[in-house]
Amino acid sequence: MAKFCEVCGKGTVSGNSITHSDRKIKRTWKPNVRKIRVLQNGVPSRKFVCTRCIRSGNVQRAI
Image 1 (cartoon, rainbow, N blue to C red):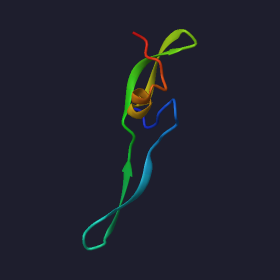
Image 2 (image 1 turned 90 degrees about the vertical axis):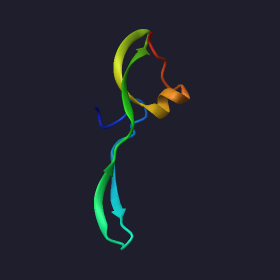
Image 3 (image 1 turned 45 degrees about the horizontal axis):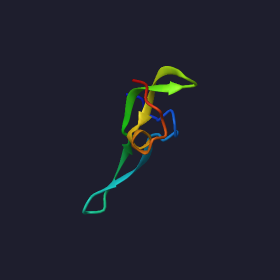
Image 4 (image 1 turned 60 degrees about the vertical axis):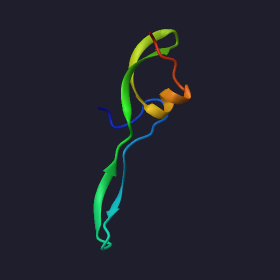
């Protein structure tokens, strides 16, 4: 899967996973993206879109 949303630009974020004993371990958080058919200027095309954009209606799905 892609690592960023082609609509809003949401991408991979890095940080620390902190244990109970306060040890820091580097880790990454990836967005929940899906490859869907999107209508763009009346033409259907496939894009990687995060589920937040799909749910909020930021993209018009092609059927």
